[in-house]
Length: 271
Image (cartoon, rainbow, N blue to C red; front, side, top):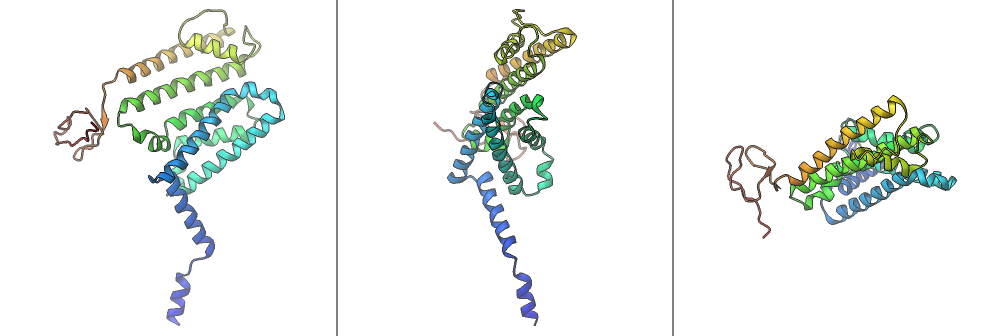
């Protein structure tokens, strides 16, 4: 009797076994280092970039009418499936939900599912570009090929600058359309770039005190973002090689000792 009871207790329901196999498969695809997993993540990244391009062109594509909303809901289905798969592949779903990037992606999904109610916040979808280029998912797939930390710093700085340009452009287009020269999306983009670079042609201006304060915020943010990009471009070349003793992540390419603790290093020389 005891043996039969033990055998019955060890038998798992088929549904549970299928769920465990699915989770293991998703973990392999989203976190594995083997070529099939890397190819899968590359495909996801390419699809994400195409989706971002759709978000950027959305103000113009809306003129297509119902076809635009069909594409909108198809993209929502893709993002929902991707988020569900990433969450299921995570070890602890609660820890996954604590990540700010996840909540940002969920908000972007909400703007896709409810375009009629969140139409004025649609420009925030461009933040998907920032979340992609600053995610572990991206750098584990693309960035592992670059030991030069300057490449990562430049990409992150560019992602912040480009995302800021299109978020502000979307906000100006949604808020000031029809006012003082903002007749279309291109006008909003032109105003944003002219203000961001502090060129200040003055042919397009935003009305009232709110418009002036927004212009000031764009100029100050533009200076900060450009300085960050310049700093990333002129930053000394370093490679990512964690120190075994103190954990310092980056060192000079020809370093023999860790500058923090003096530990002897053995940095691979590709030459």
